[in-house]
Image 1 (cartoon, rainbow, N blue to C red):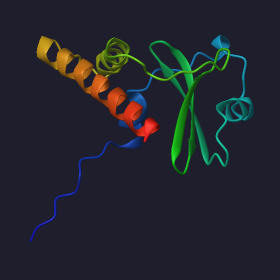
Image 2 (spheres, helix red, strand yellow; image 1 turned 60 degrees about the horizontal axis):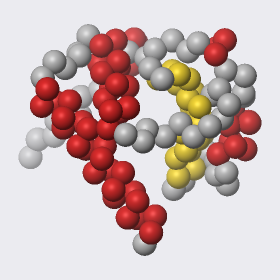
Image 3 (spheres, rainbow, N blue to C red; image 1 turned 90 degrees about the vertical axis):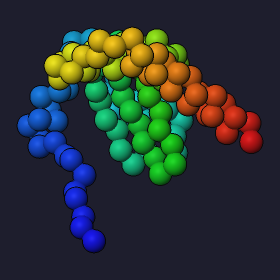
Amino acid sequence: MHSVPFPTLTEAERFAGLAPIDFARFSHDPVEAVGASGIAGATRVRLLQRSDGPVYLVFARLAVKALRAVGLADGAVTSGQMALAIATDYARRRQLAPSDAHVRTDVVRSVDRIRRVRSFLSVV
């Protein structure tokens, strides 16, 4: 039996695809983001620049919360259209921008399915 490792990016390749963070656009630090998240026992905080602005991701063992770095409002991706805009911007920066309409439709459908599953799980 042969094993083929999963393709990975080098650190340089990974960072090359990230948008530079606009530090002038937010005024809250990671400690405030953890407090505003309501997540007890946060283990990690990441700050990233999405096409819709800077966002903190607060992680715990079984939870993740996205908060906008400006105002600490909920930063969750709530629609397929929003997910598509963020993914398209990311792909454009990596020079991978999809042009096929079916790819866009699939992204929108996938995000909508994820939302329905999350809604169901929160009720159960």
